[in-house]
Image 1 (cartoon, rainbow, N blue to C red):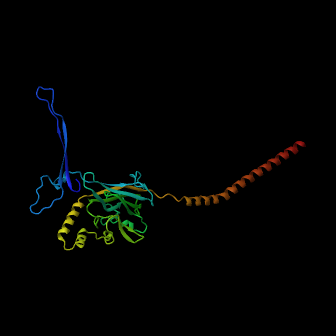
Image 2 (cartoon, one colour):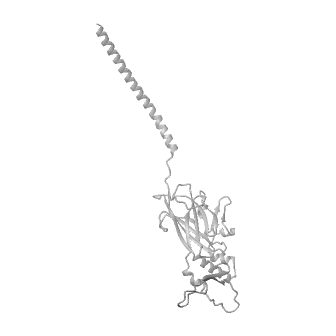
Image 3 (cartoon, rainbow, N blue to C red):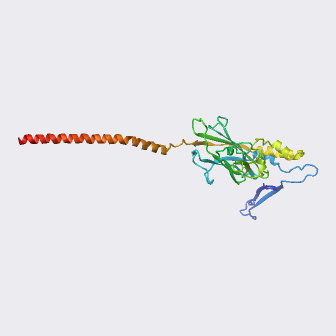
Length: 320
């Protein structure tokens, strides 16, 4: 399928057979490639067109479903990250993607992401990282540098999440559940199909692509498509209906994907403090060690003197 045609391809093969009781043939084998082009668009002025082929809507159930993925990437985004161990101060490099091999070009977006401490997405405690159809709400926190990074291809979206841990959690394990959505590439980014991060330098929301005002609902959280469509096109009921139909169709291509477990390693001990403690202990021990060594030398000296006196007395007695 391309922008203008649905194309069916097949091959017609012919293999000659010998006549009865004859070991010869007089024709060659042949294979002919056949392609049938059906226009995807047409003008209708009166009666509806009755198609000579089954419409796509009747065969979609037999097509391969869209395959979404959520991957942990290396810092240079070149490959999947093998290690699941992090320290506070690191960042989760995450890529959302959809396989469009058997479909028209699609754009992937991240509707929402939620962090929990177990593999149950409904467990508590919970923390929303992305909400309101693509608003990276974690990026608005003062100590966060989380952001949507780039879209290298329409079906791939990359974003950073600063590592974190839940207060009072018994372990350092984090699971992230994200709702991924794919819409046709012909559908422009809108308030329900966006990737918005908060910039602290400009104190505004900014989108990876699309008009700047599609992020205006991130603060209020009112990113409802119905109200947006009515506000953008008042008095155009037919256009508003088509918009809603397109949104309903695109929202059918939604999947929830999990990332985890991500393990936050326990913070290392403060080696500088240990060094200071060690030095102070050494300073406390050194006087005792000096006293012990001095006492030992005193005992040795006394023993030597007594030994010398006894030997001298014995020598005088022998002389007498």
